[in-house]
Image (cartoon, rainbow, N blue to C red; front, side, top):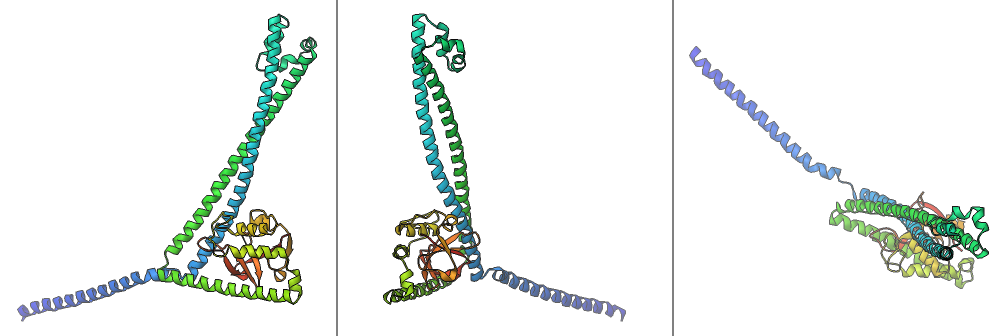
Length: 364
């Protein structure tokens, strides 16, 4: 019997081992399957929704708008600085020419004295690069004629003026260099923000991009219709002689006419027209058409004119947004405005509640 039990034990162990292996294998396969499912599900779980992407992209565009205003400011300063530097260089050149004329006059006197054999010491010093110290000596000045003294005085005057102009030109060139560095930095900031926004948008599927575009189009269409209703109400009030018609100036009409003519033109940062605009470039052009010169940046435009409450806004008023006043539009009535919104978009109608309101200003 003992000889028969041993194989039985081996068989039982073998069977048990097989069951164990089978159990482990089944569990392992189940685990692999679950891990595979998790791995496939993870990317979808981590992928941001369209609204999240839109929120992030809008934030990047707003940051790019701030950098755009910095760029506009730096460009304006650079252009002005370049004109000042050019003017200073021209003035320095003119003063140098006058200095050379004065030096030639002194040289002529020195040459004449040398040939006549009089005041040879004076002649030698007059031909030196810096004869000022010598001319300050009283015993030499006493021996000079009136015309010689005038020549010396003129030389000293021209030498000082030339020196001052050279120093001024050097300072202007240094300021120009600093402005150019700031301009380059701000330009890079804009490009970085826009590149980041494009990267986020590129992760959307074609269907998601289409849905996003549909949302934007629907929003803009609603704003356009609301603006048209407001304009019609304004015209009706004007026909009836109402207060709204009386307060709406011909100047504002020119502003609105210009803004409407730009509808559909692309937003391009740093652009002031006529084929493309950024936000402050559009408002600047619109009010220029009405005879009012606005500064280039939103930060300066907000300081021009009379501030008005949001509830008192009238067509043509400038509407500013965000705490840093980085965006501006032109109010058209009915809670709507025309503005150059962001890269990839065109000049369009928009509800003023779409962005955080900062203030409103009526130029003039």
